[in-house]
Length: 529
Image (cartoon, rainbow, N blue to C red; front, top):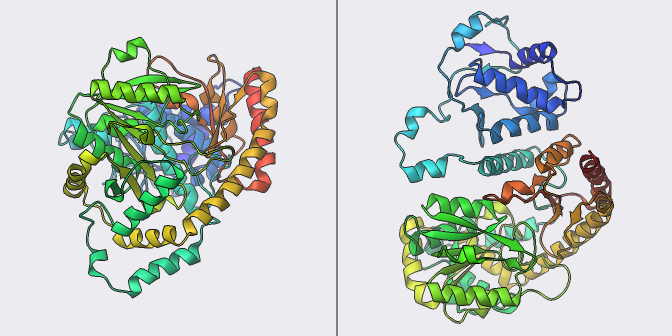
């Protein structure tokens, strides 16, 4: 097996290459690896070393290497596979042996970081793609910069959790430190101490009945959802709920309206189901369809009305009424994603769109991943009365949900009042972090950046003028150990807003002011230049 000491080779190339003096280190590393891939020095299927090891060998920060890898991922040169590594995906003819023969690298050199030139069994091979359907290829392949970035973000999030190195301000991260582990373990043990064969089976009637009843009671009071417990279906989370709606309510090539900017994972599920996505811009009142948009009649409308993702505005009453009337007139279904409704820090809770629906056109969905923990993989879908039986059959036939023991423990968690208490604690913690971050970022107004004032959710949005390169700003933040996401990666079509998505749920309260001040400096430096 041929092996190449990538770190030594990179150091040689970095020293020999004539880079501009002001070029950042991560761009230099990116450029050298990109050249190696396009010149066939690194063939398709080659596995790159971990960012940690490579950073140690190059004597640079891990954030620098992460930034280089992210750029390669965004441009399609490599792909990240959770639990396996990062692989070259840029296809070239296999002339590696010939290239290496003329290089200065010896096959018998050993080092603690080696690049394996054999194609991994888990890497994507060209012949494999010939076996997949168009829908399968859409599900497995990253066809856009946004999707590649999102997949890398998820991979980095999991790896960071394993090594306890989640960077401050990473969007989508929650602080599990306050999760009541002992209580949750006791509730789970209670279910196992009383053997019930039904808890070991898959769920065949929409989910564990006591949990469906508990969710119905909670939504009726806290979100003004108009429902009976029979309308509640337990799913494995937001993506499965959207997938079920798309499978049962649409046909291939039907149109789906999606918010722009909007939630990339929802778009992905709809795309995989063969829907044609039509982006509809949002403004300060939420989804803002124009006359041009109305010319494209949708079968589905995906929206986050109570806290638009990612910008955070609340859909106005007038817009809600118009949207409901329009859906009724054209026979469209509305998917209302109430993804973080629990985290509103000021004012009265925003009522659901579903609660205003008089015609049974809204399917309401939520998740426990934000309040509990992502690995719980439990969410819920509230369907109109005339779809109950169809969706129960569809859920069972297509997805056979399980985890009934966890569903039973969660039902007890809600019914005994622990859920409400846990939410109150999280609101206090996250609300304080939000306040501190807003104060720390106040100075960015001096350079024309606009900080969102929305009083809910787990992230803030900083908006830039169109001329600003928000990807570059995220790279600059990464060099200081701060991970934020560019707003442009959430956009579709010609309109591409610029800004930053800044999460604050995971950043320790005592460090928010320090980290926020550093991020403010980065933003000011970027916008002044």
